[in-house]
Image 1 (cartoon, rainbow, N blue to C red):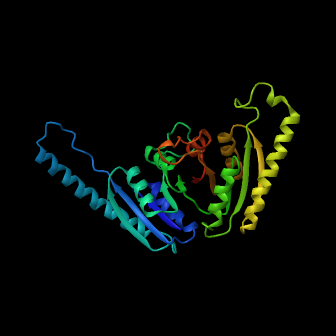
Image 2 (image 1 turned 180 degrees about the horizontal axis):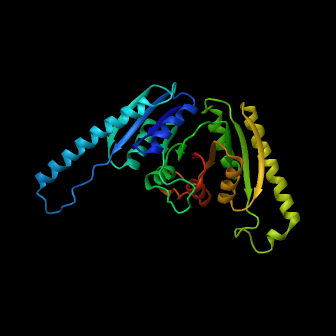
Image 3 (image 1 turned 60 degrees about the horizontal axis):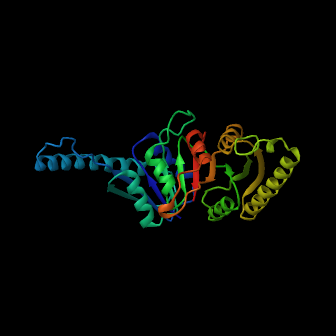
Length: 287
């Protein structure tokens, strides 16, 4: 699998580089840094002066970028795949998406600022755009990742399950992980009409169907060589995933987004948004 590691010099970006140690060696590892040179903010400046200033700033930022790429490569874990350093000029999100598209990468890995457990922190604009529009799965590393032995796979339906199975079939992790397949039924939430959540018979039937579904997904993952089990819970999907992760302490949350291809892409669904903002561990978003 081709992996694109996007770095910006933040602590989270360095943790993203270290997290590669838990992934299978890449067929090709691109370490990418985007140089976003600001335009001179003085409209009355003479064009030649403005150009000289831009060139000077660009040169300095490229020198810093080279040092950043060198440092990132120096801390890469053993056996992550031979890295190729790459530096491009442009807005980081545009650069990352363009490189991922042209290189046909199988996974984007990046650090994300503001993805901790504090609800008030917003998802960074660069991370948000990449997750929303990426042509491939994206691993968002929001903190140190000491291991990758327990994976929480949140699935809503057959589409999520199929995407997860296809991704996991490629054996993306260095070691065999235990996968907990979790689905959430939104009973007792505003998603259901008044009175529906009071029907115990309906609830029991829905839970039984959901249990069959997750057990079937888990059985499929077992055939792929994983340890897997299924679980069902009730509540608001995003908050339920966060609550489950807070209790079970997975090393990684694996989930889908509801984005579409091309110009009709939607923003991330509310569940994905909630998880990305509050996740207590790295999150891998499938597409």
